Length: 179
Image (cartoon, rainbow, N blue to C red; front, side, top):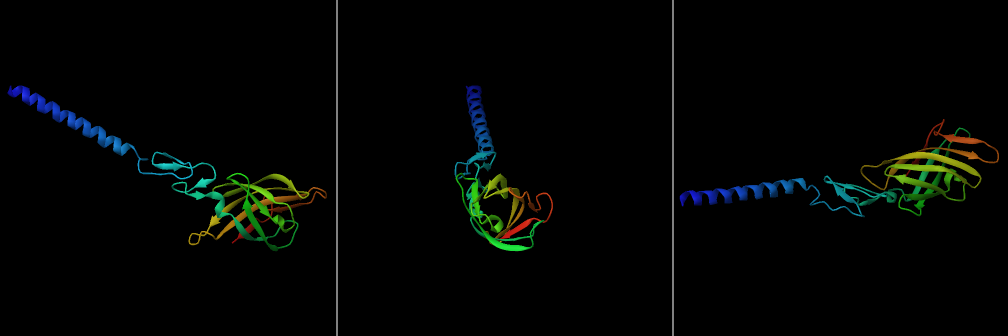
C-alpha cells in the first residue's frame, strides 16, 4: 500500500512538472503574445512585419505622411545656375505613391514618385516635354519629425532639344530639399 501511494504521488509530481515545463516554455516561445501590429502588420519572432506603405516598431507610421507638404529646393544643375524654389508633395493613388508639384520649378503637371521607408524613387517618366528619373534619401530631424532633408539625385532631359540637366544622378551635385 505504501509503495502504491508513493507511486501515485511520484506520478502526480511528474505530471505537474511536465505540465509546468510545457507551460513555461510555450509562454517564453510566444514572443508575439503581447505585440499588436497596426494597419495589417503581422508579428513574427517578436517583431512586426509591416505591409508596404507602413513602418515603425508596430507599423504605426504611414510612410508617406513624413513627406507630405512644402519643401524648399536648393540646387545647381550641370546646365542651370544655383536656384531655390518650393515643391509640394501630395498623396498619390496607392499607399507608396506620391506626386510632386512644381518639380524643377518649371513643370505644371505633377511628377509621380514611389516611396519605400526613407527612400524616394522617381521612375523614368515624361512630364510636360521633359524626361525625368532619379532617387532620393530622407534624413529626418531627430528632434522635430516634421523637419528633414531630402537629397535627390535626378536628371531631366528636354525631349525637344535633347539638353540634359543633371543633379547628381550621373554627374553634378545632388539637389537638396529642406523643410
